Picture (cartoon, one colour):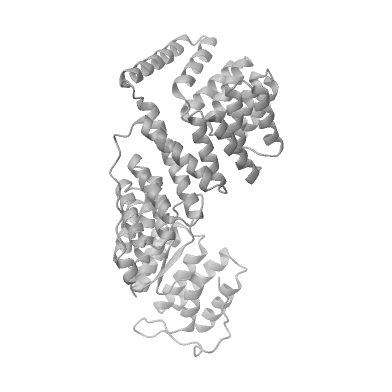
Length: 479
């Protein structure tokens, strides 16, 4: 927040608002600075949770020839004919490129190692995970990955030692705790495994891996009722349906609940038979689906690594390839829009946001993000239309109303601006900025009591803000 010198007389001192509604009081300028608006539309946009972009402010200016001549996005044709072998080859090549060309990007290295492990190239996976730990010793994923390889080789003791080292240094994740508990149980250390899972359930109650392992250990400790609850929770959270169904059936049978146990076993057999019928010779549909999901993650991670290494065109290439593999993956469109925004290719970003809204029309964030890009391009008519739609889709969300208030304010539609900001303030009354904006709109309407009322409300939320204190004093003296 900028500091405002309220003793400055260069603006000619306090003046009254003119009858045509144009704000001439110096307080209006101070309020504009304080709220960060004026003839500016600033719309918050959240695209990539890993590295959110800052709020962008766009003035009422012509976007210029650079934006006007930018090429449109060439969305790829869905690659529905890709085979398991083709996708495996492509993913391995991608993993090798991440490991060799982006060797300082821990996220990329970890994803590459996971890919190598998936395709049984365990030696290469371990090499890459070791490099991850050299760069970032407290990264949890590589420990879990290497322990998994050791466990698959039958070296449970070394796997447990590796995970315990990570645990002792304070590292935690649902995967680490579940893998550690599993390893301890294989070594016969059930009490230690039980203690680990107690922490796991407390820290990661929504992890199906933790819940499945919780049920497994409970069965070994003869706590059958507790195991039943854990297996049911795992299924609710999306755990491995067939395996967990069978474990739950065993827990039910141990309690004499034979009818439900029989039903679960029958359901599991029907699921297995249906999957077998759907599997064409030489083509595993389920496995290909899993590979597609892996491809989405790998190419998205690769695109972020490319951006960090100043290779935006490569990031774009990989994300477009992802859309060819999974054309309706919403997160990929969000990543692609972020790439275009970072590189000032706003026309392409607009097309991507329009596609997102088409795929998910009831998500208010898609409306907000599209409006943001539209305003940056000077498309205020589009921004206003999309934000208005957002108020209809999610009338309980305050943000679109506040942004519409800014648009109406910039168009000197003060009564409409007041209506919008009043709704926003009522929906989310603890937002200081919106009360300040309410004061600015009241000033534009010549409503001196309204200015004071809004500033007082803002000060109730942030009572030590010296700028607001000074503005309220000025407003009260001007009444």
